[in-house]
Image (cartoon, rainbow, N blue to C red; front, side, top):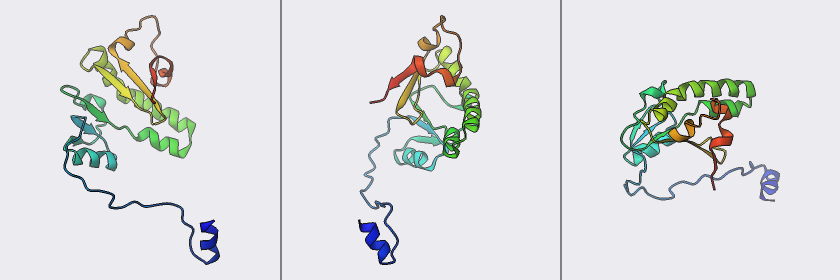
Length: 155
């Protein structure tokens, strides 16, 4: 193995690759969103590079502009609790996310927005629309219980 040879020579092992200068941005405006709300540097940078209106994530989802086009929102607070591997902290943060998301759910009910897609970054996709919220035969559930009715396999 290459790393054993390097270590036997007193060199550090190779544990990753860094790709740099792989191409040039040609200025092509390939954005599919009309606006981006995010606090993450990569998401904001990609939004700015494509000429998309890029804004900081508001503390209240009611401040997100929903009319006229599609919007990308990245909510990264739950991600940090996953990194810490603390299920209690994760569940608390999920409750905060549900409260933060409530204005968007209300906008769905009032048909101010057509649908809400939630990607939890685990290969799943949750699609919520006014029709999925009108299923009166099902009792009202929290975000943590949406999995069965709205899960779409992302393949």
